[in-house]
Image 1 (cartoon, rainbow, N blue to C red):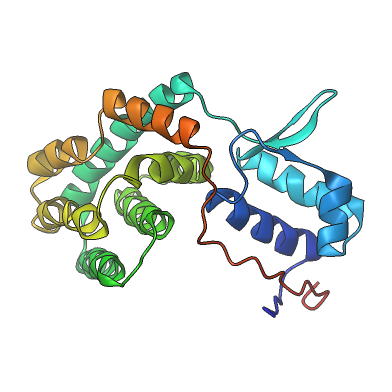
Image 2: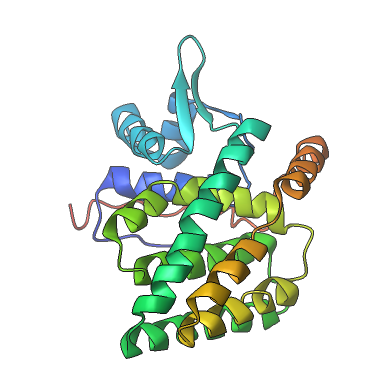
Amino acid sequence: MKKIIKSSLEEQAAGYLRELILSGHYRMGEKLVESALARELELSRSTVRMALNNLAHEGIVVQKPYVGWQVIELDEHDLWEIFHLRVALETRSAWLAAERLTDEGRRRLQGMMDAFLQKAAEPNVSSQEMSKQELNLHSLIVELSGNGRLYSIYQNVANQMLIYFNIDLVSYQPQEIASSHQPLVDAICAGDAELAVRLAGENITTFTEIGARFKAHALSGHKADTVDQSMPELTEEGK
């Protein structure tokens, strides 16, 4: 049993549900019933409701009148918006990061790239794990841009980005995913802003391609089989 400490019960519950949603255990559009979750987690409905409210602020669940809670359901227009948001934020951030990178930032970025490559080399690594690594890398590049407002916007949509990555990366090999980011990291570390912008744009799958993968993903009806189904032990410690 995993023991979670140093956070409130609603934070623990939100973390557990977030992991199930982002790993694909709960499908897009799937209904989440407060009473059932409360029984499953052995928590009060009010605690579960607060956890779901936290996830709603993150943009990964919604509450609909007469329906209740459900996992966010992205459509092609949502993917179109996220695609163009990525183009705007990630290309500009790559430019700024290359222009402003410090020695400490360079060490952090190279370390993150090394971790990405190491994860890709692990046997049976899942596309969900690779999605998290890609999000971590892009988040760091945005942070290293030095523009706090850009970083705040990126963090606000990070979980929707992760769902987007889960759809995008399922058809790629792990080492292909990781190694495709090396030239971008090299350009930023070298301070070549123009090359960094170009590579950041090239690294983003075109909307036509992501749309096709989205349709295939929707038709598959597949739940991820990489989720640990054991329940965590939720504790009051640290409240």
